[in-house]
Image (cartoon, rainbow, N blue to C red; front, side, top):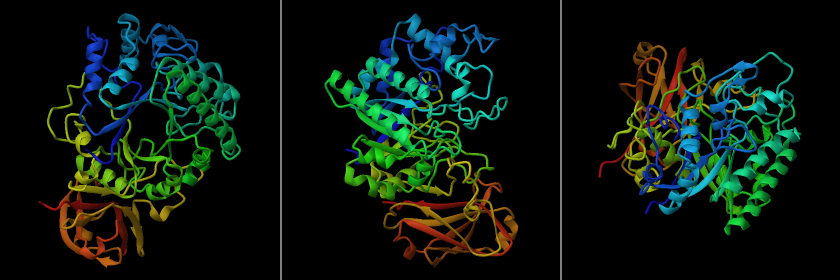
Length: 509
């Protein structure tokens, strides 16, 4: 039996793409088969997301995708969303077939031994910069007074300015009523509050004033879990998905440890947002803080990796997945958590083999969900630990720590840190560096030290993730393997570094 485990967040639109189009039909049996595809995997829990800005199911408390199917006028604009895949699918499932796919999934996941949670995006801002959209609810148009930024009345961006401001009771009541409606509708294993979509929940400058407001909101949700736990005859657990750093969450008005200390939280997931997987989350710190309260910790794995903000993100491969999992487990995480990975009902692009590539990532029929829930199996895989950004800093902190951001031109010694996790005996470890002037770097390779041990330059290797398409490689001496935290010291003049990777080649048995 695997000794860790995987959590998967099913996006509110994940199932809906492809259903109801081109004469496609969906039966209860097919819905059960969809959920059953994860049987026998390392998945322990699934978070069934019930909303973006709209509700996935026909709701009495907020605009739903079914409502959007029938909508003809939005914000004074004539619209027709009947051809939008997710909207048409919601109509097809709920109104034509009369199926509640969330209810079917909850039942089926329980039958195959996977805990079904219901997950709520706390402040999703998809398409808030548009005057009309198939995923914009009536509440957004009707209440401009509750948006975070009101000093730009004509200013629309997609960066969180138009998020709902939880300082307003109206916003809190709107979300609480939807959570209660969902709890009354679905007998789930637990509730997840997803603050990573989006974490800006208070107006700029009022984040610390909002801490107690959000504390009370979580208490209200916890009370609802107690109420409906009594209805269903079992405890309803409460989970939160938040930013990677403890202080970072406080800067957004989220005192996560207060919620933990009050005994309300059963699971904390730390994660980046979207632009990049954060490969240096303080997992060990969180585990240290949570352990006295018997709260589980999950480490998020996002769908992109990005060395710096101006760099184009690239997708995952099995060796980058393995790196994230090995690092998380080594630092004490109880689970790893996959977010924003779509598994549509019609998933012809997912092949029944064990390959994982950036264009056709294979999860449930391949290696990802059948290997990475097991710590020991993960350590036997090749791993690429890529230095990446934390993409969810408060506006006033972005770019402050310039010296640790890529790309950086070396005019003196520069230090970077990558936490790689446990290294198996006999593994070969190397450092791969991307330079803007490859020929110059090859002619005069910068000196690289890992954990105070100098590394040996061994030549170049193709790597499509870098601007140059090639990296310079260095062997890391075995004496530096004892620590699972690699501190790089790069020594050279007038060389620009734009990519750093620690590559662990698993020992052959």
